[in-house]
Amino acid sequence: MKRLWISLMIAALLAASPVSCVHAETEHEVWTLTTQDGQQLTQIAAPVTVGDEYIAQDNRTYRVSAVDEASHRATVQETGQEAAVAQAFFPFVRALAAEKRIGLYCTHSDESYENGDGAYSLEESWAGIHDVAATLKSWLEDKDVTVEFNTDSFLPHDAGAYRRSRAAAMELAKSGPAAIFDIHRDGIPDASEYETEVDGEKVTKVRLLVGRSNPNSAENKQFAVQLKSVADEAYPGLIKDIFIGKGNYNQELMPDSVLLEFGTHTSDKDQVLASTQYMADVINMTVFGGAQGYSQKAQRAQESESQTVPGAVSPPQNSPGTAVRQSAQTETQQRSGSGVWIAIAIIVGLAVVAVVGFGALSGGGFSGLGESMKRFSSEVTGGLFGKKPRE
Image (cartoon, one colour):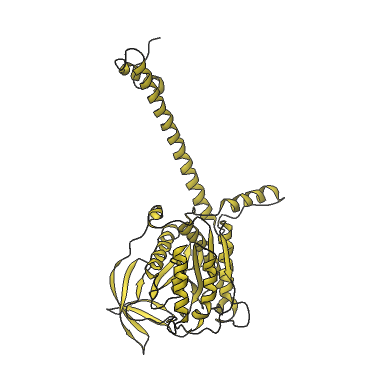
């Protein structure tokens, strides 16, 4: 709590500063990242400056070494590879939140999808990006996560948007969430950069953005890497990449704060919405240590509905989330099987202790312990091992 209030005080000082918002995104400011030999890595609709970092989908890491303002091209140098963080080790690298609470807001509250909303920007009505955030909220709530979604508008879509959305982000931070996500979509023209399949379902990838101009930058980056590590293991291909740019994105408010970009303005909106189910699962696993798949509450409700509603049928095998449920059920069966063997081992161990104790207390101390153990082994294994007792 002390660290939270310190972060909020820093945020207030930055809000009063004229240089607090150093990110000036426009829809048409598309940058291309290329290697030194001219190979194109990706595009991004955000300013790129020397010193920015990029973690590709294959976890190779790069740093921007030169920029050409005229052509909006940035040259990057490979710096290594980001080590994946296995979910099993998360309790050792981050403290899992006790209360399941998440904050959501949309700084660029006009962002929409041409293929679904009819335009890339909707300033006079509920925009497509709010549908994305609302759907993500619904999936998180299905996992018993409390979600506070700020639906305020922060228009116009200009360099001051992050300054205007800061107040909403600060209010979300005061409510004590485990993490805050600013929901966006990219503005690159090529929708194919975001197209992918998860469990046989067509969805769009999600890009993670971290600002490096704030005191929490290192922790924000670590959080983004952990999200990607979980996604890479559970739903390979869902996370497109991570961009660490010269901005703050209001992420100085909390260490666990990341900007999420769901597809681009030319993406199919239905595929964008489909990706929120899997991203909600990744957030639940990363932040709260949840199991992969549907929540037990949703599973019970679905089973109850299929049993009590006349004529109800089970979901088709190729429906969204079927593979997730099957994976969760398999994991449960494996744990149950392991539990049986553990129980058997405990019972055998206690029996051995009892035999040892009995042998020590009777028949002259430990002198007859060997014979007792032989007889016990024969009785437990049905005569396969040990000394078979006389009839």
